[in-house]
Image 1 (cartoon, rainbow, N blue to C red):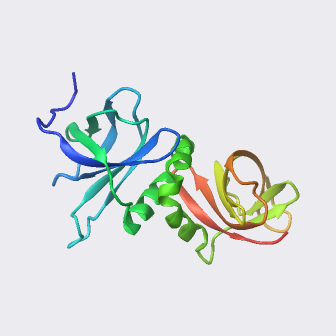
Image 2 (image 1 turned 120 degrees about the vertical axis):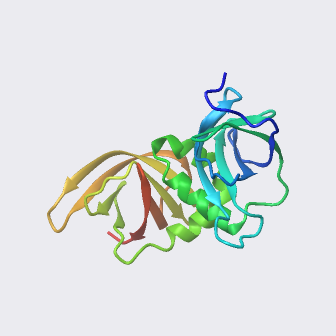
Length: 223
């Protein structure tokens, strides 16, 4: 039995299928803006991360929730929130996520920590334009990624758990296996990477450092 009261009628949702048994479920948000905390049912479907879109005044379509799912619901889905359980009836979506939705979902997936890497891989095609925009627009004071031999060096002292890398051949994602701090000539971290998926990370054009609770678009410099 659910620990929260449940609405009697399912909320209509739209399901955008990814690859590797992932999906994005868009549904209209109730006025209380309940915070998602997990998938109560069905078994085998988990919540990787979530985002709210359309909260600004006058937004077309009103506020919606975006759920990044691992596992495909075969029927109704029950979302557990801090307020009450919400039953949602997914239907296949037509069209694509909006530009604003792609950006919000991309930011949520990049900030989901190590457990979000598999969902990021599966939903990559749905959000790639937003990822490209983020990777190619680092802040002026952002750290720099420097290719050095088979590995990379990252300026500063922060050690990410993974890197998302864009090359001429496509995208790749690699887990940071080890990070070794050194301070000669300025603080830097020597990174040893463990490839997870994608193209060989050669000829880097852009990169994003993924941290446990956030991400940082990086400058790319020659060695």
